[in-house]
Image 1 (cartoon, rainbow, N blue to C red):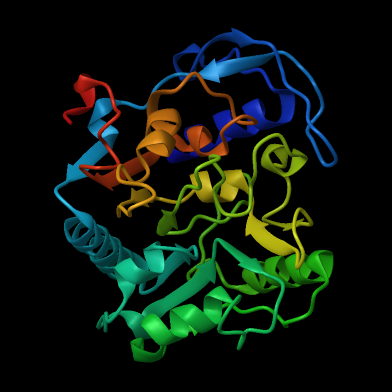
Image 2: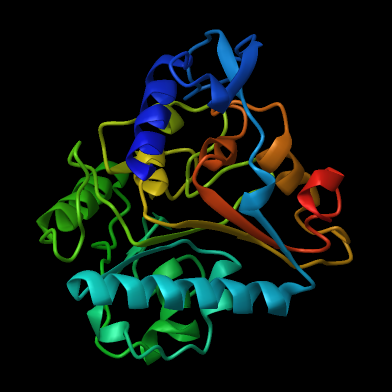
Length: 297
């Protein structure tokens, strides 16, 4: 099933249309262009809403964090029982807080890769996800194998190097599917207000890439690297997590969750929607507040 999802996404990403699996798409929309780095204009098909069974609503941020950690523990135990290793993808942002303070017994059998990362020194406490992760939890994960960058500001060099490190891992550590793409045991994903996942931003060509494992993204300075969407989608289990409120955003990630789960979106307009067929969406009540009633809010 997961291979079929990844293959369907690959078709959609490369062509902008997906006619072989009508259940994943609901109808054509006019394509949009954008400024520099934008994907080309073409007719697109809006993605079908996520199944209500893929949406899990928790009472608050603490409950979301506990649910996410429980899912990670389950995935780790299953993977280690199956082949002795656990492959985990982790983004930056609030998901780091969900793992904070954890000291899992399975850490020494884990390979951790970053879903995305800025091209900066790994010790940069302000900009480097690795430095932040180390402080929050990685320093307590004894024996974990973390795939890190060289620390240069060269996006292409860093992306190529990161992909080479992943490809060098044996299949017992990082399995491959029938197309030779990596299969992580667990992929944790955060969603930006604009729908970006990793460093895959709306209306940019990177979201359409299917042949690479890791991509450079020169949208900002410094640039960043990101796993491609087929790599994210190809994991055995994909968790999208959202929680937390503030004075500025009293309803948290509610707009992003509404668009990501059931909005009339395409891969290019809201990249997170491309993970609808495979992701479990875990969020707090505030982030779920704008979802339709069928999602159990």
